Length: 102
Image 1: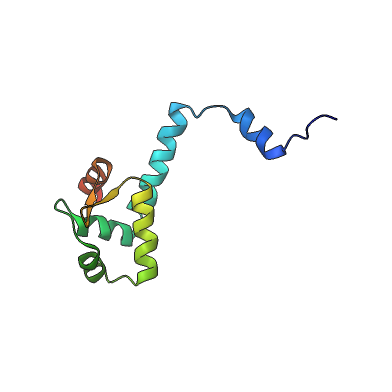
Image 2: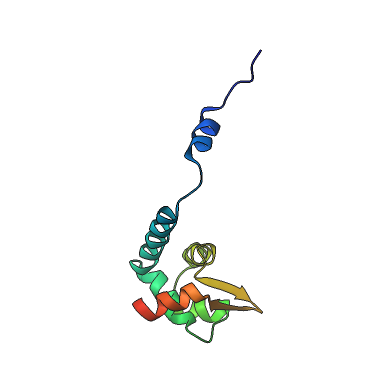
């Protein structure tokens, strides 16, 4: 009896590798999601070049715990911020977006 093929597995197997054009398009979509959201722009602006602690960011952003975590998780996952030595800091991508939208 042959193995059953899962439709989702077959679909993803047929997609192949992501092209450079698709990668650039996805990067632009993510940058747009950050740049059009005022809370995310504010968080990038608040972190600034020198970085901030979580306490400082929460106080200055005025976001409640849920929305603070939601936006910070997004910014970290997408590579705009990093958390090191107890401080949130901009990555190179975060710095370039900061310079253009903040």
